[in-house]
Each structure stands twice: as C-alpha cells, then as structure tokens.
Length: 163
Image (tube, rainbow, N blue to C red; front, top):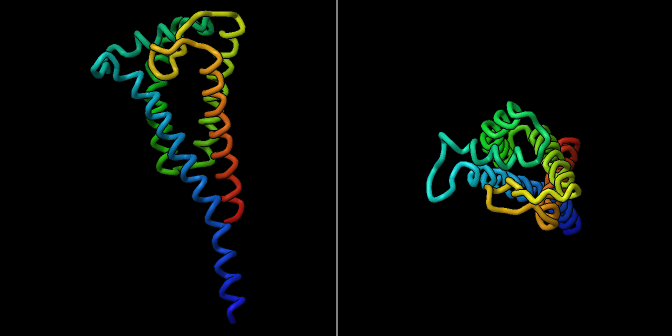
C-alpha cells in the first residue's frame, strides 16, 4: 500500500513543473510587452496618448524600412497591440496563438534591428521608449526574449498535446 501512495505522489509532481514554468514564462513575457507599451505611451513624466506616435514614429522611421504611411500606422498601432498581446499572455488566453504571434513579432523586431546594426545605423532602438541606442546588448536582450517566447509557444503546444 505504501508504494502506491508514493508512486501516485511522484507521478503528479513532474506534471506540475511544465505548467508552472509555462505560467512564469508567459507572465514574464506578458509583463515585458506591457512595459514596452508603457514606455511608448508614458514618457517625460506624463501620458502622451495624443502624440506618442510622433516620437515612436521617429524611431521606426530611422530603420529606413517602411514608407511614411507604414511608419505612421505602425507607430499608432504597435503600442496598443503590445498591450493586448501582453494582457493575453498574462491571462493565458489562446496561449498557442499568442505565443506564435509574440515569437513572430520578436523575430521581426530582431531582423530589423540586426539589419540596422549591420548597416551601422546609429539609431535609437525604440523597443522600450526612445532613449536606448541600438547595439549588441539590445540584440542580445531581444534575442533572449525571442527564446522565451519560443519556449512559451512550445510549452503551450506540449501541454495542450498532453491534455
């Protein structure tokens, strides 16, 4: 009788770890997206709901990738998209899809940043507001975030497969 109780306890514990790691990973990634959005909307000591897109648009435009209409569209929409994505990650809603979207978004960011770095553009990253210069550390940081997003995505798929 004692062996069945021990084996029942040990079989439950390993199954809990993937869920706990997924929870920690998705909440951390969600908070990072919320902080990124916050820094684009709140700077210089106040909220800038009416004009944040001008400042963020300058950072986007410095990458020399999009036409002006694309820069404006991205500057207006990306912070709110980051808010929604962060909230969905924290809530765990549609986790497989939100993980895929977060991973794809970070891959696009890293691609643009890598291109700018290779071209030796001395620009502001724009990731967390407009006060951070693009460099090797920003690439490493965003690469680490991509690894986290991929881990959350893979974890969400694996846990769904087990159910």
